Image (cartoon, rainbow, N blue to C red):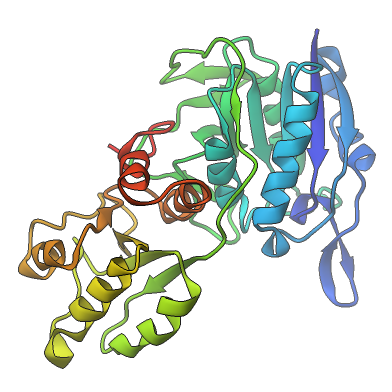
Length: 329
């Protein structure tokens, strides 16, 4: 029987109604009490490092999760992290970079309605997460939600109310849960040996979402406060050339200071293609601008945070273009 550590962090799944609205209040044991049937397939221990609405979860919490997994890696066969849905895709992506080549599964799940609600999706998602985690073929960072198993680097929350809250972007869900068992579409090669754990992130990464008419003087702030910049551009990607090409000039100055910029697209699927239009090709004259291509924004941001914690220049460029868990191709 597999021995699994549950790491409870709060979120809707652990919430109760208060005078101020839903807030995380349920303990890890109360969540486990919702799925007594998993006792027949695995033994579960639980820890609760924090109990937060996931709106409040960011880099320091991701690093705390890494610490817990690393300290307990040899004791358990897998890990289930219960988490709020709003930033779950960011956490899953971050953990995919901070814990690489794990032969053991690290499964994130949550719910759109509180486990306290009669019509909740929490019980199904919890049960599926543990059942997948206990499967002999499972490994790596995955989100299990509404019967789907999604790579941590490919997940995005695409619905705010429906039970099918998460989508796998530009990559298939690797499996679906059927009658308590994973049915694999993509099984992959399970790693051997121990994973690589990383313990630092550079939080000085900013996402600049382009809107029509945005002024280039936004770089007055970015130059002094950011080590990495993700530009969410329009369509296939590029920068506007109004204001006498001010955006191109300011980006070139930003890069000349040893900083890193990544160009991505606001369009959810099919990715960027900088060489398609003149407004994209011209970026090559600014210096080395990285391209996210089909990466999710969540993966782009957290990968850049991970890389800039220990690398700059050509090493950072090479690492960004190196696939991790099918994040870029």
